[in-house]
Length: 106
Image 1 (spheres, helix red, strand yellow):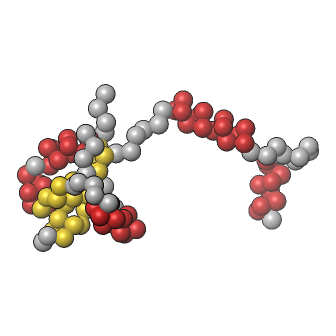
Image 2 (image 1 turned 60 degrees about the vertical axis):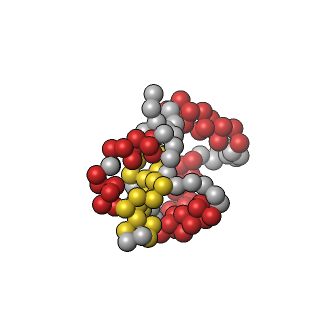
Image 3 (image 1 turned 90 degrees about the horizontal axis):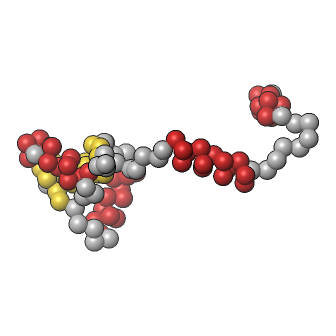
């Protein structure tokens, strides 16, 4: 099954890390936005195979097409919840989660 890719706007704090990523020696193709419109399907396909594509406006990096993060299955999510439950402290006898919630609202 192919990886899904997504096109998403990056938050300002993510943009700051773009230059860090580039300076770390990771290769990324930059494409002008006008050109990207013509080649959009191709660029998304390349991103789905793991490549990062930078979109530029007047020569400045403004956005990125990046591979989507891997999707966790429900089975994995429930396994993670079970691990969290095992690590968490047990409630004292006679105290319920409802009691704790009510105390937090007071």
